[in-house]
Amino acid sequence: MNRRIHSIIVIMTLFSAVLTSCEKDKDEMVYLLRTTSWGDEIDEFMYDNQNRIARYSSHSRTSPNYKTVFSLSYNNEGDLISIMKESTAESIVETFTKSDNIITIKRMCLGGFCEGANFDNINESFVINEQGLPEKYMNEWRNQKISYIYQYQNDNLSKLIFEENYNTHIYSGTITYIYDDKKSPFYHCKTPKWYLLYYYGALQCGQNNVRVIIHETNQNGNSSYQKDAFTYTYNAAGFPITRETNGVVQSTNTYIKK
Figure 1: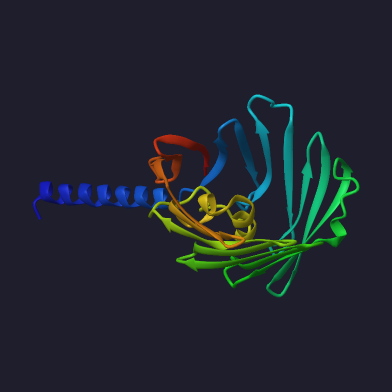
Figure 2: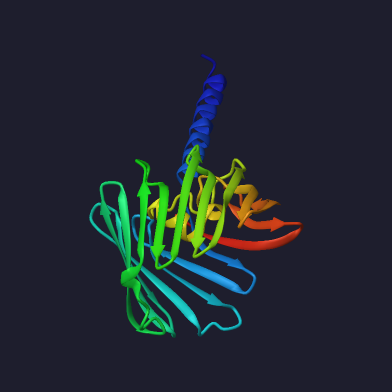
């Protein structure tokens, strides 16, 4: 074989290998949400070595000294077992007990404004599926009863069916979600999905990002319909940097790259 041709083949082979390596590195790069902010509020996240949220804080830019800090604890199976919530106003611990596919939530006041709150009378739980996604949420307290039914498509929440009863007040309906094809801010986060979805909602916690939300509700016989559309800007890896509606930026994200 001509030496020059042989050299070209070797160079092309090496170049192809480098490209393949770069593609692989890009695919394996992990992006974890560092901060998310909307209006005056900002949340900051810290992770453990398994890419689970270990701690996050929430505060106002104009009142940075008033901060709420959440510390998450896990068992050896990776289940979320407790969250310590501490602020200048109060300290509360939430515990999560898993039995088969049911997660029961309990709260205890450790001091502050929550003293006197009768947490013992609150019955709150999730039913989760095999993927760790919530199928049903239930909350009963005094004359209040709340239930959510979750439906999915491609691990994205596609529809939330809810009913809330407060004495004689009944509020019910469905929320439908339509997604883009990009990765969501918590895509690589390994914190249990039921927690992320319940506490942060579908806008942040699906596989992809919500681009349309349709609200169809009924309040004591009065029906309403609302449709909200969102657009995003993305970083080079396809994760959302900003979310906008009607040309106004609603939220901004920054990431940790690993």
